[in-house]
Every structure is written in structure tokens, then in C-alpha cells.
Image 1 (tube, rainbow, N blue to C red):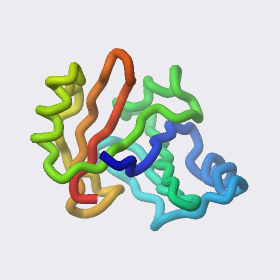
Image 2: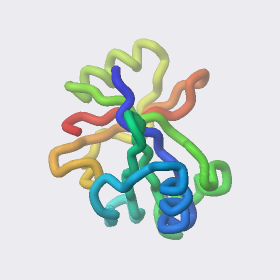
Image 3: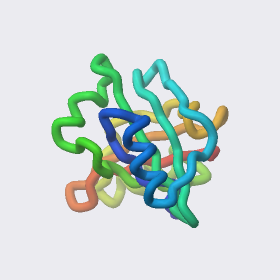
Length: 130
């Protein structure tokens, strides 16, 4: 699987974006608000690397993660062609699904994502339809 992006959990999206731009990252598209996840998202790229800045609102289920991952990477996202098949294959390798597939409008109108956890590899995101 190919890495799609590295997810960064941040408190202030605009400040984090400015810091990433100082490192040569440029915005890819516009800032996107995802009402379902109650968070703002912005993708930035530098060469072949893409980062996703995620700034959750206080009501967001992602907000408690800021205690552990403030302004730092917290997941790798991998592209896949068939989300359910990839989830099943990774489950056989001891990856546990903890966030079922759902739409990901910040990535594309047709994208779906799921989150899995591995005791030895941490949190990953799978994206289909990027």
C-alpha cells in the first residue's frame, strides 16, 4: 500500500499551516470543515509528502486526543482500492478496526476512510477513492 498522508493533530489550524509553509509545504485545496467529525482539515504537500492538519472542536470525538498528540503526527494514511477487503486482510494480521468506514469529504467527494489500530504499529487510516 502507498502512503497517502501523515495526519497531524493540531490546536490551531492557521498557526500550524503557517509553520508547515515555513518548511516548504503548500496548501492542497482549501480548508474543509467536516461537521460529522466536528473538525477542520487542511492538506499541505511538499514534494512527494502530504500532511493532513486536523483541528478538532471541543465537542469532537478527536478533541481528547490533543492531550496525547498535540501538534504532532498521530496516524499514517494508506491508499487502498477495496476498503472492506483491506480491512479484512489487516484484521488477519492483528489490526483492529476501531472506526468503521465512513465518508471523508476533506479528501474527496467519493473518499471513504476507516481507522485501525495495531499494538506494534499504532493507528493507521485507510482511504479508498482518494
